[in-house]
Image 1 (cartoon, rainbow, N blue to C red):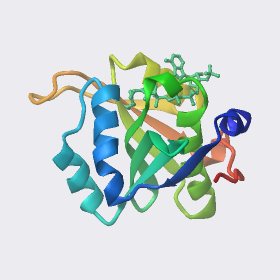
Image 2 (image 1 turned 90 degrees about the horizontal axis):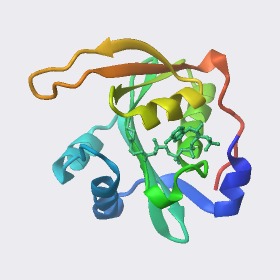
Image 3 (image 1 turned 90 degrees about the vertical axis):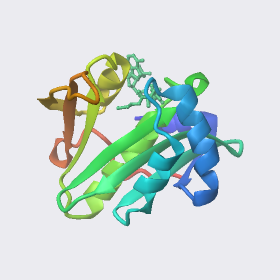
Image 4 (image 1 turned 60 degrees about the vertical axis):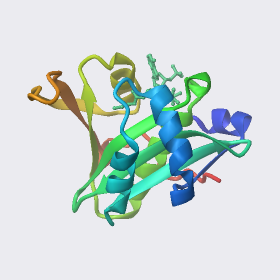
Length: 165
Ligand SMILES: CC(C)(COP(=O)(O)OP(=O)(O)OC[C@H]1O[C@@H](n2cnc3c(N)ncnc32)[C@H](O)[C@@H]1OP(=O)(O)O)[C@@H](O)C(=O)NCCC(=O)NCCS
């Protein structure tokens, strides 16, 4: 899955650095219906169990993924791809990288929460083997319900042997 698309685009996947944050924040404003603020990025990435990945195309950051490591789970906190680069396998490459991490260590699953109105993200994660396992009801802060989606390593939908740049 996705490797041919990756070659076509010549994308590079690497760890997010502090110097990337302005660019990532800018991308978030363009991509997300409810964008994180700059402090949210800084706060999250200060935690030692939170990690960011970025995808570059011709030295431009076109996508990113932020995840949190728990004892048995990798929790995806944020993922976005610039609209002109969507449907080219970029998002899948980032999630496939996490699947490689699952394969190499004791964690068995990835989870995330996706808003009820974000159908394209639900379809994206479903295409990668994620399943909706529960519903988080809206709160006073955010009235919208969201689905908790889960990927179990043993389902092996995503490749775990991928070699990326
Ligand atoms: C969700 C997102 C990261 C997907 O990134 P992407 O690079 O476009 O995803 P891919 O190209 O790897 O898509 C893989 C598959 O997912 C499914 N998919 C992705 N976007 C879809 C859409 N809008 N509608 C239907 N299916 C979709 C398709 O099956 C697709 O394969 P195909 O293109 O061969 O049909 C991107 O749409 C995005 O940035 N959205 C805005 C931010 C967001 O909503 N983040 C999620 C928060 S939970």
